[in-house]
Image (spheres, rainbow, N blue to C red):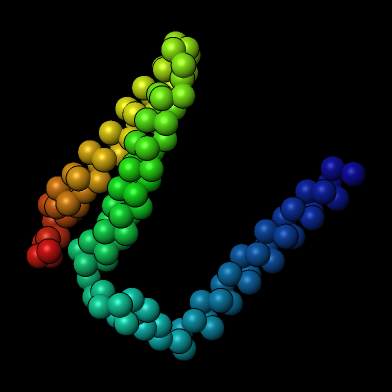
Length: 122
C-alpha cells in the first residue's frame, strides 16, 4: 500500500515538472509589454510613489475614522475604566496611523535610497 502511494507521488511530481518545462517553450514565442505604461509608470520609483500615494490616502482616511470612533467610545464610556482603556487604545492606534501617513514620503525616499534608485520629484 505504501509503495503504491509513493509511486503516485513520484508520478505526479514528474508530470508537474514535465508540464512546467513545456510552459517555457510556449512562452518563448510571446513578448509581454509593460502593463503599467498606460498609467505612466516606467520605472520602480514611480511605481513605488503611486502605490505609496494610494496606501497613504487609505491609511489617512482610516486614521481619521478611527479618531472619530475613539472619541465616540470615550464619550459613551460613562466612566467605566475598561471602556476608557479601549478608547485610549483606539486613540493611540489612530495617532500612529496619522504619523505613518504623514511620514510616508520620507519612508519612500529612504527605501529608494537604500535600494539605490533615484527618488522621483513630487
